[in-house]
Figure (cartoon, rainbow, N blue to C red):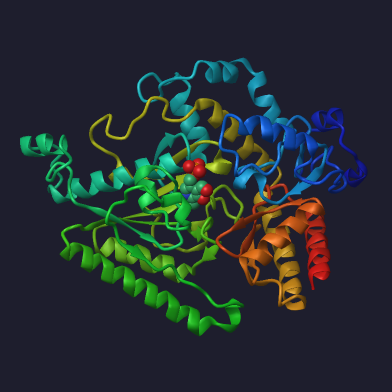
Length: 488
Ligand SMILES: Cc1ncc(COP(=O)(O)O)c(C=O)c1O
């Protein structure tokens, strides 16, 4: 077999080799290679140009997406970076995967792309089977699916399903509305616009659109100046690490947080703003990669059921395989699937799976012009094919185990610089003792050719593509070791 380590970037080779079993990404470079400072001169010139017309404070570098390949992001100055962040956790199979490059070479997929339908009104004749063959083939036990545009708008619309279902039950299942409801909703007053709430968690991130933002509590800059609803916010467990040495304290932490959730249900009922649903990430991602136990999520589901509220698991970041299962909540042994599971990012398309109970009885209650994009589902179809053909969930588990044990070794050796290694699969993170040290580590990693991502105040998160292999883990760990050694 050909040694892919010996290959240098060669697009021709990459395109011509089909992935039969996952032996790696043909055409990938041997490792990172840094030629200039980052951002380099070309990125800086482009930044100046863009800055004339946009706020660019968040731009790190400009990329060369024609030549980026597999796990390697190549920037506009020709620097080759091993990508452990993958466009904020959105690339399932890396850059320029041949299966994905092929998707729009077929006429039917290209025509679905350019004749973009208003899916809620004029779906293509391929639409029901596409949804069933692609999206429902990976559903976590839920029979219904609604497609949307992005993570925020998936949550935003799914929240409406939670309220609509809650009110239907409050009306005893009646699906008609009173005249009073119809007129009062037009001036944002009850009973048509009822006082209801959703419970979310400190540290959560569910998006930046209006309703989603009320449930986002990760950074002030996302929320400042924007009005928010009076909805309950509970504490998400904060664990002590290593988990195995702190089992008793962490169990007590779970119990304390669950008791607070119960209390808030009571409090908001008394206030006249009952809780229609719990909204939670399986691992709080933007907020700092805070994880919680299966028991915590089982407890949440019990509380939701007891109170007639829905449970929404936001798998926008955790979904599509990075934890070693297609859906992170599948690690939790829940007694039944959550009522709603939202997705986006690696799934290419935004949307949510849900129970039949969560489906509105009338049209246009959850609706927008495009309601997604069939082109993205054709891409997802190719992604799922690559995942299955190459057993990538298994690859994630193997690579994740290697990364996690390597990080544990490093946190023992450099305990003054990193701690609290955590996560599942390759969806991993560790903390630095301060935000400044975290940022210093990330900057030094970049100089060695590792594109990394931070989250929360002190965490560095790993979000590699599902094709990240043990050899990439070795490169990541070696570079991190060098950085820590230099900072010691
Ligand atoms: C858990 C979670 N939910 C929702 C969102 C919002 O997704 P988008 O940025 O696509 O609107 C994100 C984005 O990072 C996320 O991590």
